[in-house]
Length: 230
Picture 1 (cartoon, rainbow, N blue to C red):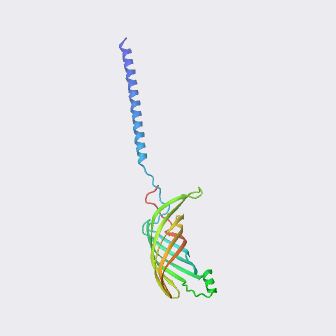
Picture 2 (picture 1 turned 90 degrees about the vertical axis):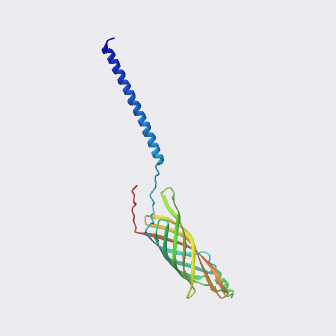
Picture 3 (picture 1 turned 135 degrees about the vertical axis):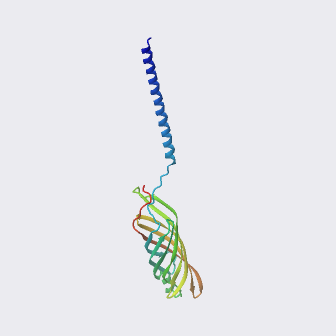
């Protein structure tokens, strides 16, 4: 065997070893890259942008109000609420409701029997309120798309005018749901208990005026932008 033949075999063997080493390096590199990517993907948390931003926006809501626990009278109320959202969770505002009252059928039956009745019609209510949003979520509406909503708690203080000229200090507690219709438009449903002392001929009585309220909220400004894009 001559030197040229042995040299050729040694060169071929060295070339094969180099190819094998390169293949091992590529395999190890790919495995390490896949492992790193897997760890990265497990650590990534995708946060969806909020559909409704309340922070530093004013909410104006015309309302329709219906007392629920009346016996001798019935009332319908129209009014409005203005809230300033300090954060996405907390807001403060003011409200006004004008009531229109009439006797119930029970009151008319009592009068027909000659029994004296004493009723107090609500005239209007005005006051301040604060609200807190502890829950925000969404659901699919018949498979058409997500509907974003929140649940909020409300507490307020104001005055209710009853009769001709009497004002009663009134506290209120309740909660409601807000459904997003558009970026600046919501549909609200609330139930609140307006509590005050009323004076009758037989003495004073603690009154719970439980009111169902619905309204369409308009958020100003109408548009907003996110600090970080998707």
